[in-house]
Image (cartoon, rainbow, N blue to C red; front, side):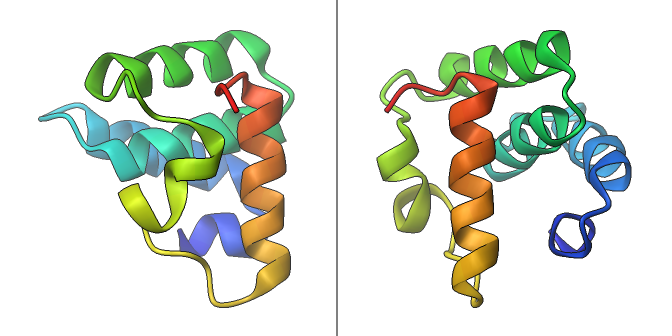
Length: 92
């Protein structure tokens, strides 16, 4: 999440994917999707969204926070996350 807040989408993508490997971890999957969208990598973003929906078929942009992860303290970070999840293809 620190990488995301800093705008370091490559670091966010790398670390979130690493955290998803040993076991399902939805919050990291969400960050993976947002980071991939931030890097304009549609294929990677789709893979991340598919990962998230495999874990939680009911996951929607509107239910990400606070249901599945905490909101960011800064409104602009939260809004950027939501916009990138939409761009990644997570359903509304």
